[in-house]
Image (cartoon, rainbow, N blue to C red; front, side, top):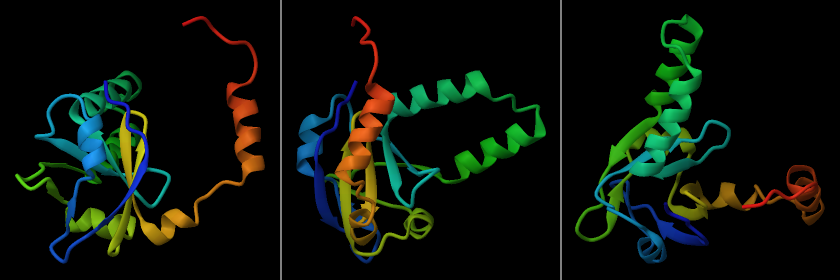
Length: 152
């Protein structure tokens, strides 16, 4: 399983291509041949999933969603609508589909952020406005991580 750490600035060219950060290529386990790009459900960014993590996410969805329930089927359609499979070229660049660039509001300057098993791709200006205060981070740590520690 991958574990991505760090944030790296990149430039989106006029054709929608971006150079995949070398640091993430070093952190990558497995093949970089195919990845999934998906517009994030909650934020104006794109999430890059290695194929292994994408398959794990789909398994979670399959456990919860019944495609024979109309509302759940509509959710599935919208979920997949904002996803695309892409490849890195021989120069380490990937082409972000225009519809995803528009959905996430990516302009020219991008930031790739390692979020454990996935990577978020943000427009630099939007990313700079998402910072949580130190007090909010500490409150979240206490709320979500505080309490009894389980053995690993």
